[in-house]
Image (cartoon, rainbow, N blue to C red; front, side):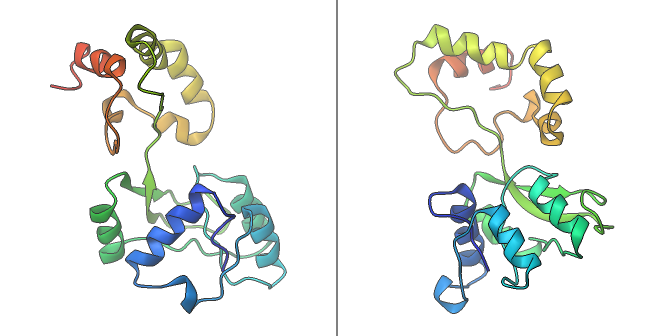
Length: 181
């Protein structure tokens, strides 16, 4: 199986999943390939599986599923519970039925939340203004009209799964709109 390429977020997340499942990389034949290369290797019969972490629908998975039967492996039950307990930045998610060719059922999984990050030394007023701009009507239209996952970026869940402290400018914005109460 491929866990993705060194330095990728997918590789980090794949290791979390393997650890939660009680598997060591040394117990399986592991490759470290970009998702597109892993999909090609899977199609050629050179891989049995690959990890992919990213918003759905993902073109690499959709293209592969259009050319051959694939199975999106669920991350559910006790495995998901261990991941969600150990790594607070993960959240439950579901890949809806029909997202990929041949996928006729919802697939439970875990995912990470979208986070906008800045350095602590940025001016409070600047970060307050940027945070406000990220949640204005124009940005909402862009999120809703872009990738399918963009529509799921919602103000009411903006602070879910946050694994780092808020910048004081962002904290002031969320406090002003009542999200911190």
